[in-house]
Image 1: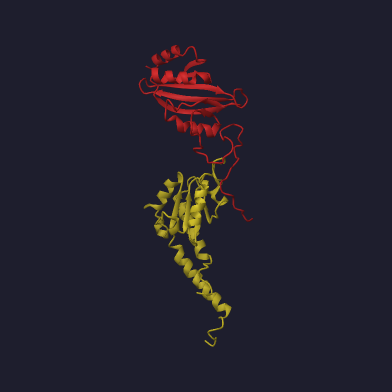
Image 2: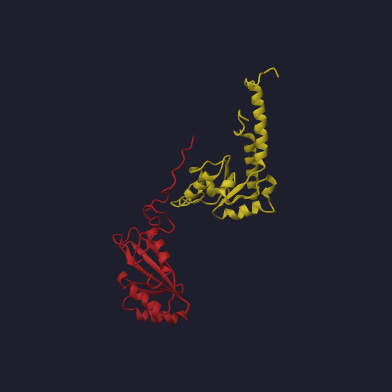
Length: 167
Length: 160
């Protein structure tokens, strides 16, 4: 009111505003996840189950798989990743635009599972950052739904740096 | 039905087969590497073993010659199976390729080559099939450390 337009607003008010905006953007983003299914192995069956009618991840806004990483913001790595496949996974991850999140679906993507040998990557977090691990061989659909809800909580609670002083 | 053809095969190859026994309905022959092509030609052209099932190897680390190379053939005419084994030494694990007889042998020889290091003389394409370029060693040999990894992508540094 009495503050001239060319002077920055008091930081308390700005902080309040950005916090509210972060909340708002987080709320919007958490219900519009576009998963990219990087599906390599038998966990795919469970992924189909959890994403189709009976368990229906559409309820959480995470239903429509985009089959190009450039249009997706959630990388779901479903199944074993071998060393031979690791460069492909890295390339897919690098093609995704920010903001992006990664779910390691199943114990093989989490830690390599029982493939502790020359062929398998011992967990995708060796090469890309992972937000959420869902262990299990394969995980039950309830676990996946619980995982997606936890990821939504994480998205809602984090800062969304698109909101800055310029906006 | 298969007993008759096994008897004929055993009789015909009596001169070159070191062993010929029928186990679990399969005739198992052991031959020397230099007789391999002769034996396979006879199996294919005279006895109708027209399907190449598999080639693999067995590593016996304490034995010399160290490797068994094992082929399986099937006859769609006699409904019979034959297993052919030969022994090759560690210093020169070379056997003749069967690609001139069975085109399908090419891929299986590639796999056997990368996993055990068996060299198939006459197979022009022994590039890695399941493994990748740059992989050192032969992972199904007993002396390959089970958990030795050869990652293509450098691992991230994980903050504590």
